[in-house]
Amino acid sequence: MTLEYDIEDAPYWYYREGSDEMCSFTYKEGGLESVEIAKENANTLMNKRIKTLTTKVAYENFSKINNPKEKLLVESFKNDPELNVFVDSYLVYEKVKHEDDAAITFVKACIDKERIMAYESKRLKSLQKTIMLHRSDEALDELDKEFQGENN
Image (cartoon, rainbow, N blue to C red):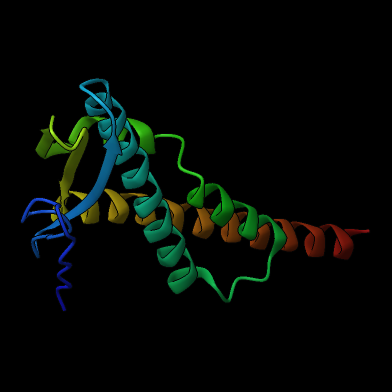
């Protein structure tokens, strides 16, 4: 479902997101200096949108985990230290419009959804592998303890 917003005095493209992209929209009142500020705000908003997506992915895939060490691994997944680099690398400022008369700048900045999904899938697979290795290590430790207990 695509939502459309009609915001008075905003450009026609404001808050219109294509089905194949994830976008952030911002505006900033002011002179020409507002252009860079609005772009920075769009970048920040995109980071927040992807963090929200990551939290949902973690919940959908790992909400039933009870092991404290595994929970920590999931928490570290949600706090992606590489997210800023990803957003900086792939965020495209598709529309930037500054209106001198109204002293306002509007920004539409997007990342292709396939790129985001590939990024999240790669991270998810890595986390799944890490959790599997952790479980394997714990199982081996249990076997070692049982084996040592039988030998004593």
